[in-house]
Length: 535
Image (cartoon, rainbow, N blue to C red; front, side, top):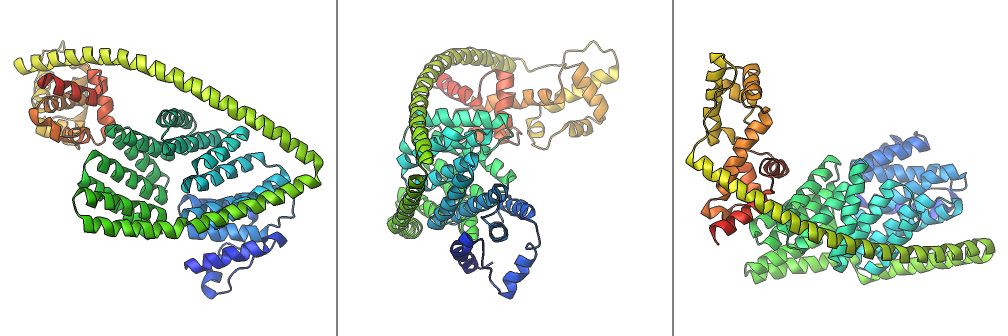
């Protein structure tokens, strides 16, 4: 669908929506698309639009939202107007994704006016949060925070609380308040996991950015990969492009320029295909820094010029000035309404006082909570460090013993010769790391190698070795990982590399298995082994 269609459709909507009308293009191509949806009821239009929005089909979603705005008159009852509010809000989000922040804010304000008219506090909260996101993009972090706190005052649903805590955390992160950001983001993740992982991908990405700033790169990679997986499951292409950029940034900060370029190029591909100009602009800046670090000043300058040009085109001062003027007009209109209705003015004044008290209470509570949590974490970290060191020493003893005395099969209480022979075959195969460290190794493959079957192999592992196959296999793989960690040239590996080398399909599965078997995280074990080998 041509971009010019949407601009014409949008400006026509702005001109006629006050009279409950909407102008649609009469071109044959547009009519073909519109005719597919125009027969739907308002409820069906909203559901269809939301479906395409969730699938990142923004062009189709925008057509449905605009059809809904034209179908339902704003002079109807409050229930019907609620559908218009949702359509205006989602349309505004689409324009913001496309970097048309002025148009986005115009639609947000129209939605706010309807919320105020019909008393939809919950929807008003959501829109305040979205406006805060616009100010956050223009680096007006203090103004953005006021909008987020204003929304947090009235929010009642769990998903709204999760979203606002995440937005506040991201805002604190960009202001450099890392401790506050860490607290807010951790709280939002906890609540999200208790309620269907709502907005989880955003919080995971912000945690990755937080750990990058803290130079905790293993944690940054971990959270960035989780965020990317979550975005793929939700089919959020814009988030995939953004999270690939996060990975590229983390690798650049870590000093891995080749990996950084790989992820930035993946992000660029998705950004170019979908016209995500903001992401493209930031990617050019990162590429400029990468080329500068390599001493390629000419290439660095070329990418920096692209960054500046693109950044100016989507977020110039004139755009922000227009938005500020739009906000001023909205505030004046709102003031006139308050003058006409004295009672509404008194209620607004009381709400403002209440709002200020809540802000003070929230800030004081956050300060006390952050202070308490930091003290608790400090003492727990010391205690955990001592416990990990004890477990690490025990693991060293086990490794040393295993080097001196290779494990032998202890005859089980089962008396059948076939079971004894099968057990010895299993042990022989399990000692071959080239076999068991294959990511596709399974109990079925073990059965084939032992010339047995799944049932017999499973029975022997359970009765003779007193374990299920997963624990049995993980024990051998983790033992191989410990051996690799103890090698002098281990510095050339990362945790991710070791995980895949010993057969795990994901780093998270490796971390869980390593801690389950050894009692300590792999990163702690690696650093402790390096200290042990180089006192």
